[in-house]
Length: 112
Length: 114
Image 1 (cartoon, rainbow over the protein chains, first blue to last red):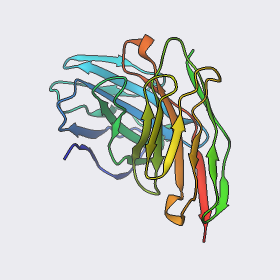
Image 2 (spheres, each protein chain N blue to C red):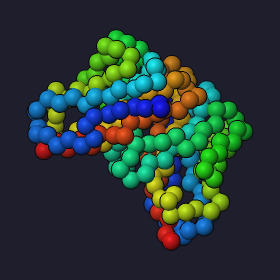
Image 3 (cartoon, chains in turn blue, red):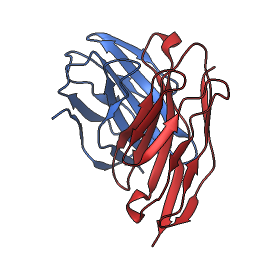
């Protein structure tokens, strides 16, 4: 079954404590992306990756890092989280413009 | 730049009522258009799509037609059920970006009452 697996589903952390949200896909897609979802703002792209070792900023990259060392994994790193990064995060992958995204189940992050 | 505009929610309907959720877009080139659904506590699931003008996407009783002349992709269902209560997102792919970037509307919450 085609899947995007995110972990953890829920995370409460304190300001400044580094964290990583993992994302893994089994569809052998080259493209992966991270979005955050906030009420009234919809989904906004944080970072994306066109292939292994190729990453680029989306619309709201400040405060985030990513890496793509292998095709299936695309972790999102918050090196010093702040309360304004409290949000619902989604990892997604696609095979192209006409296919649609497959999303992970989401990670609800709270930074206190 | 490319953008998607959805009608504000929430939309509250009685069971078996007709549903329309409006979506219009602005895009350079010829985007593909999508509707996603998000049930409470879950991720977004692809509901339907249309990849060229006049295409009709359909799934689970939902339909949407890609109207290039009005730059619209309105979601419709003839008879909604309580189980359709969710948030619906309209989205487009931006082929001119060269990055498979998808642009989403802000979502429309649908509540169906028994």
